[in-house]
Amino acid sequence: MSEYINNSALRQARLRELILQLHAGTPLETVKQAFAAEFGDVSAGEIAAMEQALIEQGLPAEEVQALCDVHVAVFRESLDQQAAPETTPGHPVFTLRAENLAVQRVLESLEAALQAYREGFHEPGKEALRSALSKLQLFDRHYQRKEYLLFPVLERHGFSGSSKVMWGIHDQVRAQWKALAALLAADTLPPLAELEARITPMLQAMREMIYKEEHILIPAALERLSEKEWADLRAHEEEIGFAYVLPGKQWQPHLDPRQAELEAGTGVAARSVSAAPALIPLETGALPAEIVNLLLKTLPLDITYVDEEDTVRYFSQGADRIFLRTPDVIGRKVQNCHPPASVHRVQRILDDFRAGRRNVAEFWIQMQGRFIHIRYFALRDAQGRYRGTLEVTQDLTPLRLLQGEKRLLDD
Image (tube, rainbow, N blue to C red; front, side, top):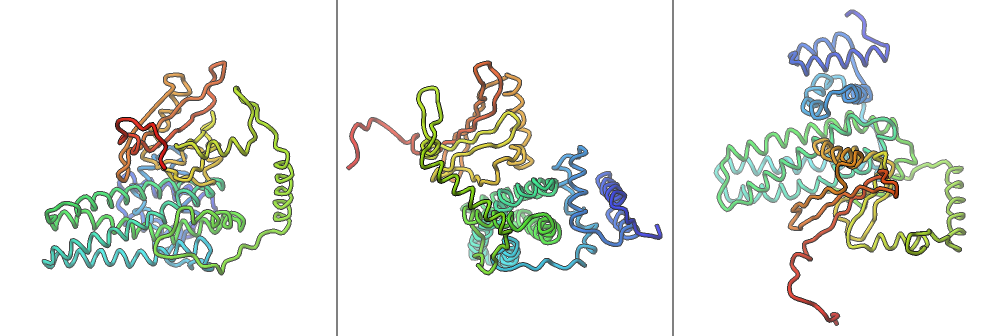
């Protein structure tokens, strides 16, 4: 074509056609040449919208994820020409980008340790690999902040395709970390070929993810999120933590004063109501909302409630939560709160509960030396109608160690 496509709908349709050609086996260079001839350039938002549309049209997220690097390869030259967004220390984007810079040095140290192993320094090389991997796994905090803070907000803006794909890649990287850790934990020296087979694809996946963040996710987020949304996100970052860096304090969100006044008024109203708390009638008593909240927080287990429309409505925030939850999960479809690889299991439980095929589903797993018991219960009212699902998670490790009897209070 002699002229670039300018109509946004036509551009999206043609982008999807090109990517579907890739999925059908058309050589990468052929697709790149067609893209260069027809488009010239493409924005991060267009790529994100294209991937989301493919998923909405029925292409499995796992298939989009599998060819995500190839998608970016088609558009890389165009993306490289776009200016990086400028942010201020303390802004969540600045922190994400600082962590991306820092983890590059950790990846280089892992490569250096692998090179030492190649050159015959097996024992020190193995120890250096262990050390570098331990540091590398701290980067999971970076992934978790994306998954539990940024992705839910993007979903509210209708942007979910790329986040599903990224979460799936995060899980692949975590699996690669785990496999490498198991290899390095053995008493014997691992074969060089096996080390390279574990490390090389992991390095590639992490570096490609950094590129996608910088050129697709971050620009798309900056384009969509309001100052208030960035401020809310920043307020919860410490709950998850940071990798290698600490956020600065220079960034101060510029919020609409009228919104601040509205929120302040709401706070005053809430305090005046709490002065004379109303009781919530229960089957066997009545309690103030404050006490109900304290009871739920004090239970020695974690609970999450998902309503009959599969929307997360509540989770208990105890002192020692087993699985991470942030306030951004409230109002989110539960299917979007799980990595793509496990969504089918969640959906089956919900479908079985809704159809009345079962009332309970339970699992138990080993996690960091702890024995975790996870149960799902169908909630049904007096007429037997399905009213949602209750998830109950408990660390049974100390209970499984109990023996004999204990009848006295500790001093």
